[in-house]
Length: 282
Length: 161
Image (tube, rainbow over all chains, first blue to last red; front, side, top):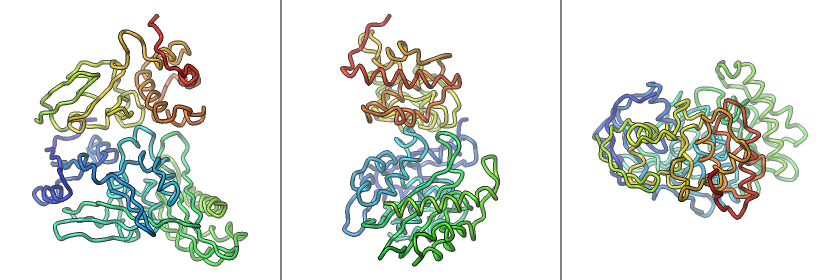
């Protein structure tokens, strides 16, 4: 359980990190909290020859109120998200979902930027950010760009980040009156989600005006339950069970030791119903 | 090799280490702190839990170079002038251990938990220790030990017995 040898660089700033990425090319990896990367390096599933440590970039740890949205620095740790009062009040879905990641010691190290950049479909925060229509600010040698969460995740552990790009900020909307929920289903303490469902539901005049549903561990990337979202738009709250019956449409869950693909589909439907019902109660 | 400096249990240590050296191995092998236990090595069991700048972390998933310039506290460093830390005393009194392998990690995680949530409910204590596994399944008394520290809210260390 020891990683292959690598060289280690400490980034003094985002620009320095970009410069180091440029120097070392595709063999380099950014190190944030290390709680996704180091485990796969110990298993030798990843073997970067250079690690560029972002751990000293304390200026990337913040939650800022920016009017209609909140800006979250990429190096903000999960424990800081969990405890942040602005997030709790304005975008409770992020604070709550962060509180379900791993365990407290993991959350003392793991960062939101690390969770997003790693791009693991089984990770909780990415699907919550997908349901929130979050946007990601990334910076590279060609300057800065903004990527919608829906365009960010490409395939298993693959994102649109270029080899010389650094994710610097995550922006989430203030939820105002919208209801939210995250339902994580697992069988043992600290396990990954067998399936997770994030929901953001807006209401008007007693019916559902829109629902956005993010699915954890239902394919090679975090996914939106688009069929269920369409069925829920304009629906009466009494028809949630029927509308979420299509929550697994378009997904491709895998079978593994925790669950069969068929069971995951069942969970996606049931958890979507529960998540939307809970969101409606908030 | 990279030169690092960290404070461990109140004492400054300088070392030349390979970047891939885990904090766990640095503490055990370079500094000889056997109280930091190596368990699963996969961020699951929590036997290797230490404090990094006062917060619990699993030292099998932190590189020694990441702790450069920081303060590390192990179970060895929590006694005060030969007196057990209140959490150690409580684990003793409540018999919060069987084989003892998980104990250093449990104690370090429990101290970190109560620092963040002094009034944690029983449920919050159980959730707060979810990253620490006791394979003797002695969880009941571990939870009782943490509650005992809450009850002794004046937090005075008890003499070693």
